[in-house]
Length: 252
Image 1: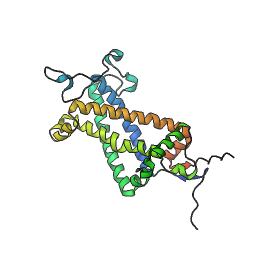
Image 2: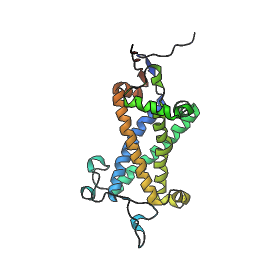
Image 3: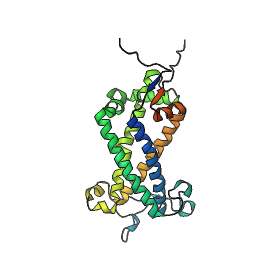
Image 4: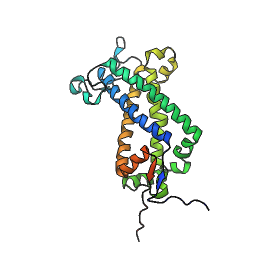
């Protein structure tokens, strides 16, 4: 006899150990990199497009973002930077050390996801899910806080797939590639990467925008966890066990 599908109220296994480990490594790594990155940004709180920025000989490029007049020229306060005192050298040490952790962890996760079929089975959107009507239906359900229940809660919806996919194939790779392009030691070895990104200053701007995208993802992700039931959601990412939300009663 075939096993019955789990139903609302059942305690089931939701996340693989590898997924949970990668999730928490990312929490620590991205937090440290963001806070140390804010300290690095404080050293020159302007962003440019092109190769040279303010260092262009004779004709400095205009900054498209200038926060040098915010908070006395230090836009991000010590409470959210690493280190908490001004030290560009220490911030770079923290940033570069955890950049290796981020890159290696992402590579291992992608390899594991491909080998185990996790990326194809759970995260790759199906063609029907990309239909505008389907996406709009999910947006309306989320706006009304009507989250999946029963066995459906074990599957990622299209909004989750698009959000997680953007992190995996756009934001995290973008952070890593632009970080490489800004490294003087790698410019000689990978000059094509700098040119592809439009110059080192463009790479710095894209790096900042990818980081902002990760912050936006984090804020939305935390909001959804709180709204969906934080104890149940966090337990599933710590132990792998998740209690399926009970099905809504149909209105007569």
